[in-house]
Image 1 (tube, one colour):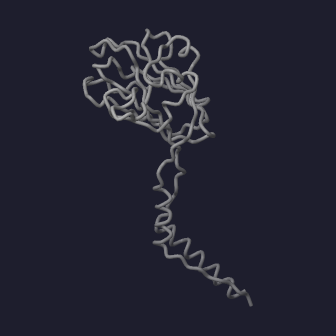
Image 2: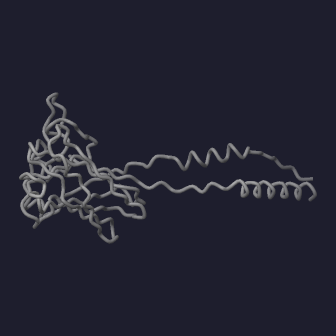
Image 3: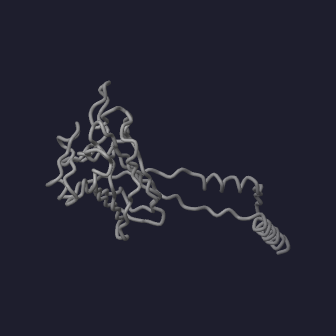
Length: 228
């Protein structure tokens, strides 16, 4: 005589657990970063963080995205600055060139760049961005918003889809080769924050017919045990 314990889980409960797993939010990945040597040697830097940003990079991963008129400076309420501005000097060098080193190798979901664009301050959106994830082929992003350059709130953002990319480093080469196309003399390129999100594993939810088949199989196994 065999002794067994049978635990029945309602189909609706099992399905609900699967859906909950699939709907989890993508996790933000921690990283450190450094500047390309050509950027450090040839591109001027401005803002309250300018003093040590090249030697101790920290303004782009501090979690601060500000909304005052000059976010790269302290706020009127003495809130800390939220980003850095880089002096434009032709297109010979990355403006800036940045390499993100992630805390581990990750399957990636997306990367979001928070940047500045304001005519009164002479700060312009990037013209383009060359992205290289690990050993993957590079690709260009050129859909930064350079319209309506006069709002008081100057923060804007672009999210780049990285589905299918896996790596532990992301190289970013920002360019602004034609500031004159913006209709004003942009002298600076401004960045506020860069965030990277990890891809979540996909979850396959069985169809009702598949669940019924699984249930029938379980009943057959129980019957065999009883007759053994």
